[in-house]
Length: 222
Image (tube, rainbow, N blue to C red):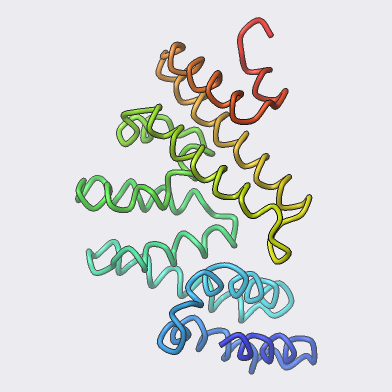
């Protein structure tokens, strides 16, 4: 499947846009049948390649939007699942249309709260990033638990710093920026809920994990 993507990219470079589009569409529909390990690549770099083609070949962008729209309709009709929802989120991210993902999640929540609980972890970052505290407060009940999850991810990533395939200064910078951004969003939520005690608690704990001035600046009076 990786070779399939490589060849497809070669076709794009050669200007064989129509054939490349067909291969991107096939990959999105069938790659996991041949290699389940391509799950992440299918929803990340493969979509980036596809969007890049769409920027120079409009039929490719039209096809990507149609797949998103068709998938969204299935979800709205109650015929989707977590994987299909993840597909929609990923395409919307590539298209920079995360607001459509949030609107779809709100629709799901209105129809089936249990299903919304199941889908919440996939869209949580978008909700917090867009400061939709009206939604977040329904699903985030324990900021201490949320902080523990952020800390766990940060710690797991620090173990990769010396991995020659992943680590390095760029990955370290990414991990620290992600940690700071996640903490900022939790503090922002706490303050939106007028829970300053939780905001300070999260900040104090976060600074013990990463001594970063950006976090200290969030403490009143600093």
